[in-house]
Image (cartoon, rainbow, N blue to C red; front, top):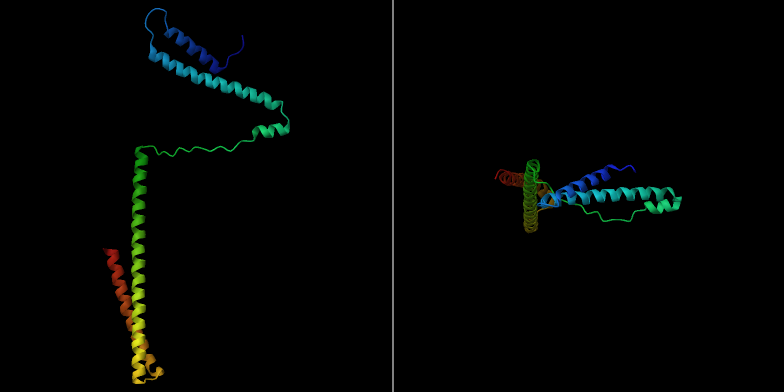
Length: 180
């Protein structure tokens, strides 16, 4: 008698249980029989895989080098990735943390964008005011006939005072946006 593998022994035991669950007289336990049949199919698949592995080993032993390379050359297969997150308490906590962090990040990015937009608006307003002041100053200088060298010190002091007030205004608006 040949030596049976572990799976073959399991298959024989399940076949015996199936036979015993189908008595000639009396009722059959169909739930148990179905369960045993499923187990039997699983074990048969395992046995067939083992037999196929043995055949592959034998054919590999008889192959040449080129045939072995061709045998192991795999065709590209599309891997089907199952993206499922289990619904466990741990993953629910992690999901909550991730969503909170994402929310905070989105809020900070939105606030940064609003501040950038407001800063650009203020910069444009400042440039427009500077242009208007420069135009007014040049018109008044031309009308008064003032030499450019005489008005430089006064213009520098006025520009510095204007920059300080503008800086304070920008600082106040930024503080208001951060605190509100």
